[in-house]
Image (cartoon, rainbow, N blue to C red; front, side, top):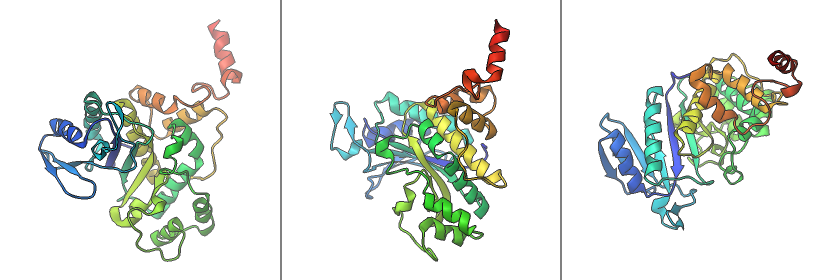
Length: 307
């Protein structure tokens, strides 16, 4: 699951873009380049030839050290270049550094992860839609998606799911028509409303050929950021490798157990993934170890043996 390329956008406030850019430069090296675009972008042209960006995002509720502010310099979006799994440690280092200089997040901030779509097919995109649809509620609770962010990362559209099942698309144009709910769907602007879902395929169809996952509350906790990246990469890998995926919701009488089993299935296996599994099941109800909790026969047997 760690072989595919990705990119990440992290929204934050509490510091200015200039402070964020200089903090980033200390880690990746290179030089700063200020631009006069509508986002007031500061490019960090790193020594390895890649370009990182610090830019404005109007959806962020701006704060400085004293509280609310109208100064748009405190609306900060950190945008990475194309990355691979070896860059995850660098992302964590950057996150820690941004927090150390006063960066913080609030409920208006999100994290978006873009996944390389080069290998995706009609079937893998249908798989992706069905995977997210079948675990809508579980993922939203596990990731604690806040109410005031729901407009930017809506749950899977039931119309989309129904149309996929009814029409059974076999070409990219057919699945694109279903995504935009129109015949012979053509060009749609960058800010088309269809993009504001947990799973965003607009970014794939508009020419970037990336599949975007938008369902992450922003954080400057390095461990959580890594957990989100790993989850995105693992779901992407599942969509690519699995022959077929169902849209039907999974049984979730024990949420923690259901999520643990799912995470193991998609690659979160072994002690090296323990902390990241815990981040992803922390807010769920139930027992991660026993499917039926204290009513599980194995639980009762284990307690009996302990006595």
